[in-house]
Length: 100
Image 1 (tube, rainbow, N blue to C red):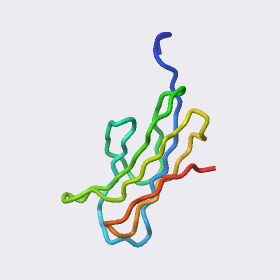
Image 2 (tube, one colour):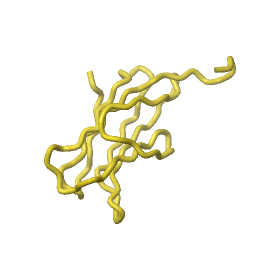
Image 3 (cartoon, rainbow, N blue to C red):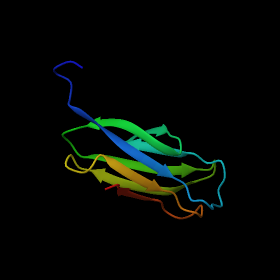
Image 4 (cartoon, rainbow, N blue to C red):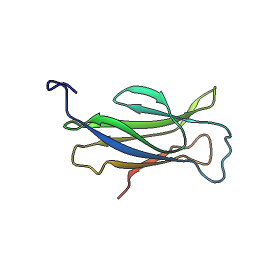
């Protein structure tokens, strides 16, 4: 990293699907600061700016519509671990919470 680059920190995001769901083979999409990227179920780490608030969002997509959407505004003082829980039904919202 160059000295003029912004300071960064790593966050851990656990993506959990319900044990019983009416949607199969659907993978989550992670959105950090407005940029979407495909993700996998389980634990992953991402790099975010260390000194600013970052909005972390997740949604599911089944070729017809998005569902399971949840967002969390991660402040610099928040713990660097979040947990997303997907809904069991394809028309409900998901949840993101800090993992403390």
